[in-house]
Length: 93
Ligand SMILES: [Zn+2]
Image (cartoon, rainbow, N blue to C red):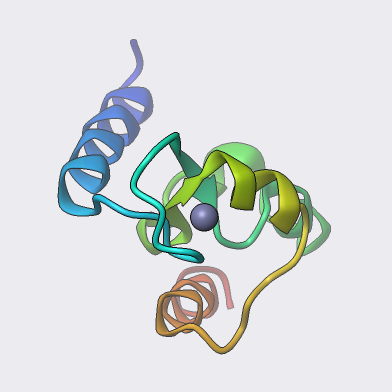
């Protein structure tokens, strides 16, 4: 396991422990980790897959249903989403 993977896995574990419900609907079951700004969108911004993993605030706990329904949408009004976008600008802008 590379250094990055280890960091990512640790962060994922931490984020699951800290958040016990879906960011979008509040559901507490079938939780998954989602990229707030999708990897495909980041890629179009010139940010590679591994670079995207450096964006800690871009990870969110999202239930399976919302993850599927959300698809490539970005809910810009949520504070967590703003935080993720600010981080992208800070790191890559
Ligand atoms: Zn949900």
